[in-house]
Each structure stands twice: as C-alpha cells, then as structure tokens.
Amino acid sequence: MIVADVVGVSMQQAVKTRRETIYDQIGGAEGVNQLVETFCTILETTEVGKPVFLLHLRGHGMAHARMEQFNFFSGMFGGPKLYAEKWGHSNVRQIHAHVDITEEVSQAWLTSMSMALDKLSYSPELKQQLMQSFTDMAAILVRQSQS
Image (spheres, rainbow, N blue to C red):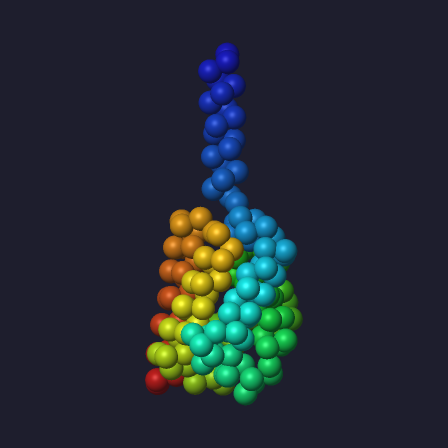
C-alpha cells in the first residue's frame, strides 16, 4: 500500500507539472511584469537594445510598449488573454504590421530578451523554450517586413 501511495503522489506531481503553464512557472502576473520591466530596461539602457528602443520612441513610447507587452505575454504564456480581450486578437503579425522590422532590429530584440532571461535566472530549459518561441516569431516578422 505504501508503494501505491508513493506512486500515486508521483503521478499527481507529474500531471501537475505537465499542466503548469509558463505563466505559472515565471510567477504569474508579477513574473510577467518582472520580465517586461527587465527587458524594457535593457532596451532603454544598452547599445544592443537601442535599435528596438528607437522604434518604440517613434511609436507610442516605452510606457505603452510595457503595458501592451505585459498584456500580450500574459496570454502567450498561458495566463489571462489581456491583449486579445482588449484588441480582439493577439496576432503578432497584425500587431506589428505598421513597423518595419529589419534583421538588425530582430537580432537586437532577441539578444535583449536573452539578456533579460539571464538576469531573471530562468532555468536553461525554460529559457530555451522561450527563446525558441521568440526566435520563430521574430523570423515571421522580419519576413513580413521584407514582403
């Protein structure tokens, strides 16, 4: 009976782990906010982030970028779909349709995000998962701009 109890607990833990979203893994809304703040600070204060920062200055500014990035990441990571609730979609191509995203800007964004993930001490597995998703999105946005 003890073996069954131990196996039962392990199976419950395994099921819980599989269902845990990225949103949960990074600490919910507080974790998303911490990621956005860390990332945006890198954009604002480093040479590597400067190309992305300048694009945001030509747009609605960094305060707007922070708010919308929080809303978008919240849903993307498995939490509340705040961006979609506000705008009716969360299509990354549509969101960036007005922005000419070059390879240089894309690489600056990805490098800045990688730096943010490192500062927040995410596990290598989580960082790899996030960076793969971000890299895939960035490739789509660069191709869109070149079309």
